[in-house]
Length: 244
Image 1 (cartoon, helix red, strand yellow):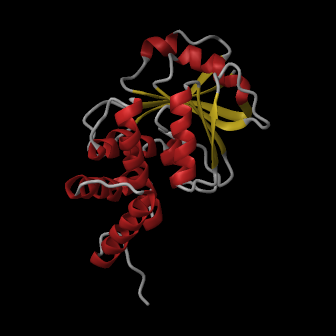
Image 2 (image 1 turned 180 degrees about the horizontal axis):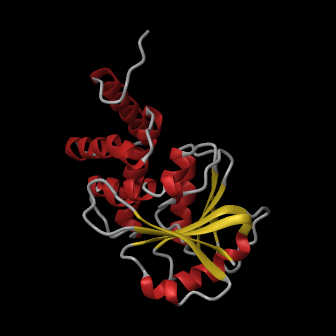
Image 3 (image 1 turned 90 degrees about the vertical axis):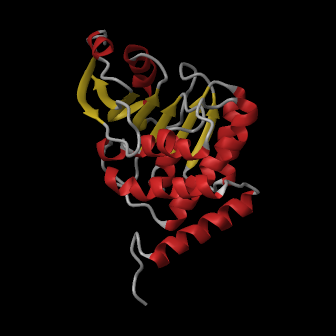
């Protein structure tokens, strides 16, 4: 049987069926217009260096539906519409993938994970990675725990704790955050959790020149990358640091 490729009508139908099954299994729903927008966004993930299979796209749509459902009661994100979550959360998270270290067995810690971004999209896109979602908020921790269960993310673990108090059994290759704090605070909190040759990755909006200038001498910036997020008309940057 010939392999179906991205963009083929048969492949698109396969994805739609996988998404429908996944949403039904979780008792979730998204209206047809928003679902179409979400699938269009996920099809554009190849533009940021990641081709997603049908199951991965189904998991990402289910993640958005779950986030939208919990958001009504728990205020996890200021973005309310599921189709907008596809761009502002899912594609925004996936945009960092080409800039993270290569490897199939990375351990990644998402500090201040909140609604599961960037950790959950990264865990779905890279199922061979081990991902820990860390947040101090009990209500956000409850969402993260439920999301890992309902999305069947065997490579993902949610922890409710302050980063200053967190004591993992093993260190991490990547410690990442999005809008958690200024760079210096993040570096101080995350550096002790790194494995040798590990890196700190901070997702930012505008280029954070003042925060970079305020970094302590024992933290070195090794890369700053402008991120192009399909469908998002806003500045995005990734700052990669390591202990000096």
